[in-house]
Picture (tube, rainbow, N blue to C red):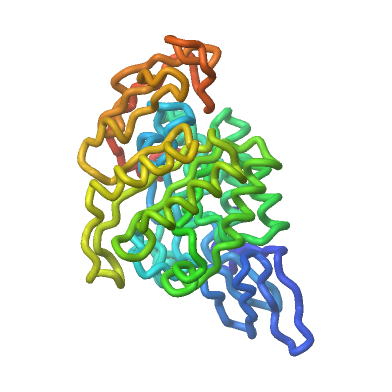
Length: 367
């Protein structure tokens, strides 16, 4: 990365020329068709000099060391810390976006600090982080930057975690996840109506991403669904969603049901009642999902802990991102009955706890 690249944009490859002179971006299923000087819906991929460039390569919305459970990932190196960052823009148009100040930004790509892949990897290592998370907005839109960061991290023994809506085309999906170690996919609902009216996208490409990740990669996968009162929280839809997960992904993919709070363009909706999350978790367990969690509610220890699917004992106790109990053996089995526990675990959990530590990348150098 150099000053010229930052000023002119990073060249990309997922696009093609149309007969009418426009260029079509082929990164995500929006297939934005651009005249010279135009930007795609994500705002960060633009047509310049008759190609599509990424305008946010090397620029971030900020860095923070978080608990891995905040991503949320409950079965990937529990208790460890993760260096989180994002950029600007998004390829979805969620009316309920809870990171809208970043994902809807039209200026952050100019204002944010520069951070090279090598500096990010070095910072993660020196800070004791086991992973780097591409989050806040969707890493799909900063595909090239995320991959270069992941490559640098892998050289340092640091894992890469994608926090994503999964809205991406087949070819870039394959390339991107070749460099990822874990992903939390935001399955926003289980109806095309919801996706079309509230996110401006479609459901099927997200389901395709989940199936690809589970059956064609070694990436550890967890799912999050934000439950919005009156929109995607009916028992019928929760039945359909959880049955689909078991039938298409298997029982071992953890599912997180999280609480909505009024934000962005959906200030008229109430907060999600805790009882709704409990019902969703009960339906998931009934339908065969072994690891169902609740989140975004104050200190929900029961809904945040992992239980053995065979004997029911607590495998991993959690309270507000803190590990309170650990009964997973080095062979990833229940200490009480020997049943397997799906996930990526160390012999002992980390002890990072709930703290969130902002980081200034200018304090780190590769010189």
